[in-house]
Image (cartoon, rainbow, N blue to C red; front, side, top):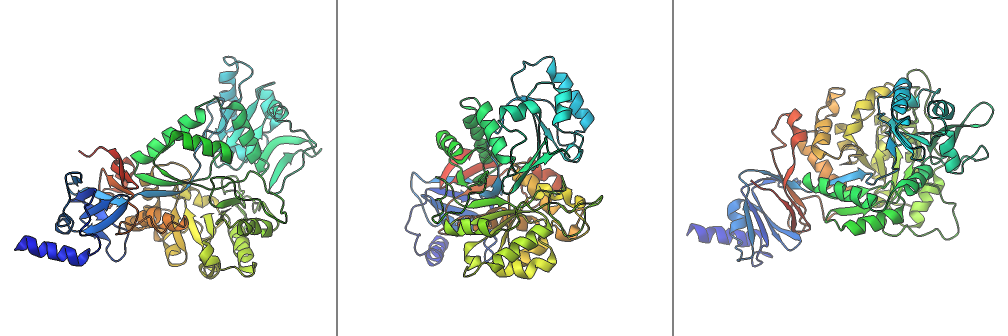
Length: 517
């Protein structure tokens, strides 16, 4: 009698799918659905590539099954929608001999790092180092300094933020860049008082250089290996979708991604290294891409984010473009979702005004994106809300909030009432590390997200930002992208969050990782 009652209830709850035989059934879990009407459940049924039912164990078991149905008892393990990383930069980038610098290195560290490799390395390889705030703000570190420290060598120093590069004279020569070069739209070459290049390169002057050096230095198969490792790491974390803004040129990236044949859903966002001139018939979007990203300013690390009040020590940053009309028109004419790197509040205010001034555009339907959104301050909320903006937060950046001028930079929780919010790594790929950063805000406690809000932003929020309304929620009719986690991310201490991995990852209804205990 009891079994008949349960079956009758299932037929009422799931009239369309009760007769369908699930292909995968997950039972006994703590299922975070992301569906506000039903935030948690116990069990999920999947048929083919779709979720067909979500409910209690009894309700899902009543759907039946057959010999081919895979059933898994989870013992209370947490299930979440597949993580959708809304802002990643997969790829290999320039290859060469690493010189041992890092984001905290000083000019003295640089000198020691170069001295340590010069005597033991052949003269031809590129010497490549990562740098950060100290060196980027140290105006003494120029091509002249690099030429003194590494005479005749090809040296490339790149900021870990991606917003600043310093090159030696030999490196510039190898790239065919001399003092006659002009600043491209959106970029600039640093110069001495006599007009000669000082080796410092920024923004849209820098991006073609990075891609050119990658092309010159990568050996066959290196990119595929890097992308394969990236995709496998993503699956291990329960990341089922990535929104990629690749380091390499679009064609090179596309070919390599297809070659690794990963099950991870990949949205390839066009990230042009230069600004094309407008023509009567705009060029089509690069093959395989979806969306168009423009960089409007730098970051507070190198005082490059354009701000309305001065930074400590002076300066207000620099916007890369005097007008945004061309960039906006390029996206509209090619029917591409527009994504804008906008860090500073001056940049954000200028962008919102430019969108608002564009005639005859239903912006909420276009889902324009602001990457980072550090400078979306309260006085800009009304405009951002009217435009239907999505902000893609990067919690691993929150450490830099103190570098901005006084103000409510790097908001999070209060943005939920204003705009759509997604999360992208743009740094360490580990989503649970980023969830920790998003939910632990000693710098600004009132802007800390709850763990449920952070997971929702990393799943449903990122799916919205991708224009994929069929992803991001565990509900009937949605695509079956899920992750079963190694620990309860809603209950463990914050410090334990980064230790989380996926025990099971399901993409498009297929189990791509199964390490259930």
